[in-house]
Length: 284
Ligand code: PXL
Image (cartoon, rainbow, N blue to C red; front, side):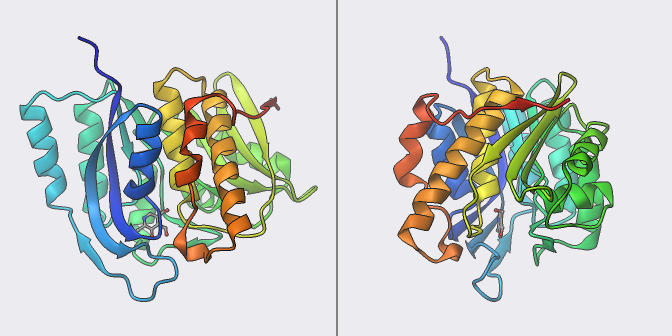
């Protein structure tokens, strides 16, 4: 009997706006990975651009969920965490990682974007996100989150050497690091950087003059699916960058409001082949 790969997905469920579980489940399902959601909170919408946040915290549910899975001896090939609603949820994620120590542990250290921290994240949660990152096998910060993890000031653009320094320092936290959405000071290019003990690679992405919520969730979900399918880190990151870019471009062409998120639904078929994989360049 051979099952398909499965991941526990510790994220929120936001009803409208295409982020977290509402994108992670379809993306990973399209990659033939079973998603077992462990919801951290339910929200009517994501937190970006819909006014006061309507959210139901599910912190108390997380340990019960873990206990149930353990009592049923349900195993996971990966445990993947993202948006957390309270500081205590960091401890619950650490408990999941301890219980599933043989699983691939992916932490998307969701905290903010474009230099701003999400409204529901407290300074204490941001401070402790480093602990969670250190318990992971792979982390996928954007530039804002990388700055927070390193205690650096956010900069909208970075020289390539600084970006290389940041990712090298993050390798002291965890074996595999992917930094998304790095805008280079030299030429304004948008790149994604990934690194492990084999080196550092850059993946160049086409610039789209609009930011959409949920792109980090799409990226990290595709990356996780790729790794579970046996991609190398750089191949999985390039698959994730290529798919995210295709969906973002298609969304921009439609001109829909940014807060509605990325129209990825019509692009899911791209996840069943290698067509979105882009060139990766070894840079050290
Ligand atoms: O995409 C990250 C994310 C996840 N979950 C919620 C969010 C956001 C970003 O705005 O608001 C609820």
